[in-house]
Length: 247
Ligand SMILES: [Zn+2]
Image (cartoon, rainbow, N blue to C red; front, side, top):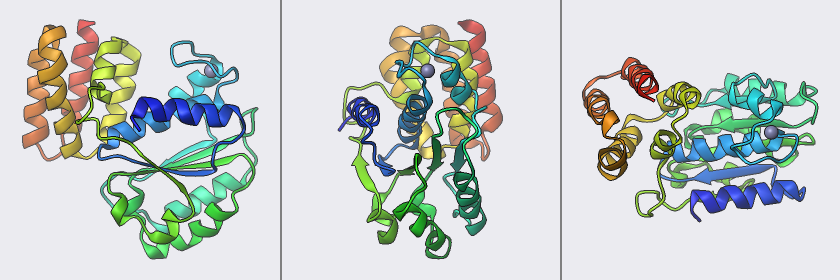
């Protein structure tokens, strides 16, 4: 399934009250996973099942991370700790603060959840509180614990490098929306460097040179920094500030 097909499939399930409580989104690219998760989460909280372009108040609260019924765990590099799992369980067991009563937790790189920390999550995955959804993301589903895997519905996303679909970076550039640029910077910092490099390289040769030559120089600088600087967070910020200034 492509990410586009998957997003509309999951939205349809939710709208019909049939969305699985625990799903795993698996693709080689963490940004793809995150962008699908973000869109589904927004939709779950949207009061009117609006599409992405027409945001309501609830959508806005999700996008700007003001919705307290959503938790993100996992930085893509380090193992997920028992404490983090405990935080999920505690928060998800509380009454929802938003009107529609939904609660969602997203765990990036679920393959980084090891046996000891996983155990407390198992029962929770099996018998989730009502209106609680787990969205687990993975870059390498072969490494997911079998006990986790067997309790979730797995969706495999076709590798975006093999399809003609735009990747998350290109989608962002094409949208030409300053606010999403600045939010995206935070998101991209959570990704693994090799994913980012692959995606930016692909965007550069396929879209940026052709359609956005005004971003070309900044994009090349970003690529250099991603490749050679250990912690490129500042460069990521700088990049998005630069292109937001050009738009
Ligand atoms: Zn909405």
